[in-house]
Image 1 (spheres, rainbow, N blue to C red):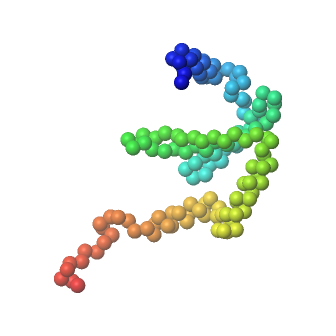
Image 2: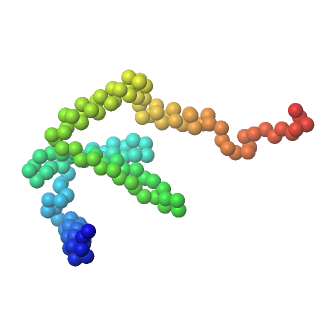
Image 3: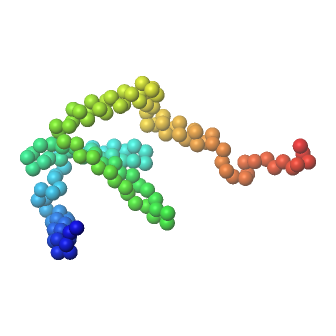
Length: 143
């Protein structure tokens, strides 16, 4: 178990790091983006950012960003990040190709984004609504 003084030192150190990181100066904690691509996919947006390490090696950050709603109606953005380093690029690519091929073999090639959105709209149009106006009133005597 950590003593209170050790906890305080750790807290102060992490506080220092967070202030140091947010000072607006690039001091090695946040690396500069050298290339970026934005991919919009329905309610999600993916950011593919190429950055450099201190040793000037490239790496990729993949960020998934999507807007969600709180129970009070306000919204927030939820983000997930993956860091992919160059020594892992080939294995990652092989793994991604493998799982995409598996999905295509099981379900066929994916539709274009437009066709997918159109299909979802049609499916939603075919779903019965829960409104009482959609039902015919039948009296027991009519049977």
